[in-house]
Length: 519
Ligand code: FAD
Image (cartoon, rainbow, N blue to C red):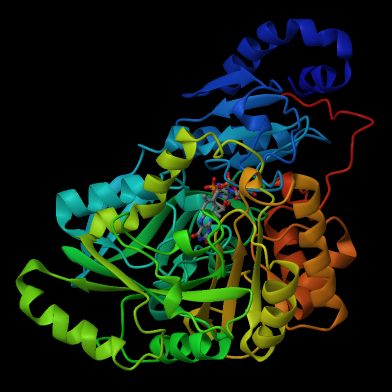
């Protein structure tokens, strides 16, 4: 079987027989799920970034962990095959792809697990690694009235995909990223072993996989902490013309005790002009609200700042909401007159970017290329970053949101594989480019490179989030003093470098000889 698979990889004449090959491989693997040819037009050769396209050998739609284990074991018996778990393919730089390898469509495992677990007075949900967060939300809230505590802004992402990175949104200042909100995982390692792990059981695998960029195992099940879901959310945006005042208020809010602040804190930079995508019109939360630029001082610069906050409440709390929210807003120094607010249900709030997706799809810009760049920048360097990058390089915008908001290092677990800047407060910066509304792809890619190179050159305390590097030296620099731990974890759980080749960190050498061993 393995010798046979090797022939397919290397013999071009064999291409025409791929359909037969698919069915015999499927039979030999005894999959509960299905297997398809890797085609350049198949979903496995594309991602949201739209910058890279590579042809896999096969796309596998497993029914669960057993199937995934068989696929990884099969790959381990060849000398060249790699395996990429594909969540929902929302990576930017081909991270979920495998050139000439086996791509596993995790979404086909989505329905395998969904179990609500009350344990010792706390509540958890067990879900498949391929579950979409939007389904976790709607099922948890509608059936049980509970919900995960930490989210991403957009929910058509998979549980395994975000846990392999971190999973960050406006709740992370309080509860940490999504990687701080799981207590148990089931993982298929690079050896094909199905292993349950937690803080106390196989802990090196547990912490390695969290933020591990898919390098140590494929997450097939995750146990996620829940909290009681609120009924409603008051969602508010206020505007600042000075970066120092914006950061002062954002940092004030994220360092208050629970119950003494908002439940969600984010922010973004926008252009001080009437551009429909990059400027003032991007601020109002409701089409009925107007952005009145006469409130902005004449001395304001090329960009302005919007603080976005949300306050959770139950319907029965309604009479006290105004007092609580106004009390908090009263402590902030935003530009008077530049406030937009709406009350929406909790699920509607969390699905806000999914709704925006529908609108953007309607105007055709969702499916184009997205040369996005995400960074974590230390508080100590964020003023410099604003001056050089936002006020100068990006003063005309990126054709989409330019997010910036503070996070607290103490809410992240140092034992995971995620790397962060030094210092307690750091900012996430996300340049969410939609090319038709901003610079061209070439210019966007060049700007991203310029920004990263500048950060390195001036010695900024920063890390890429959802990192993408080409060379071993860059990865070593990225991980810094955590590189040796990352390499040791790779040696323990995926010595043959089978998993997640699209991250371009470790390479399974191309084969000359295929091991001839029966599967
Ligand atoms: P994929 O892109 O398919 O995979 C990502 C990586 O994880 C690949 O290396 C893949 O091999 C690996 N992988 C996938 N599934 C598994 C698994 N089960 N086990 C092990 N490895 C696996 N991120 C945030 O943190 N916050 C946000 O608010 C946010 N908003 C976003 C909004 C949009 C519109 C988009 C496109 C992305 C956003 N992201 C955000 C980024 C998102 O977290 C990443 O794209 C992430 O990779 C999840 O996407 P995915 O599930 O499609 O995974």
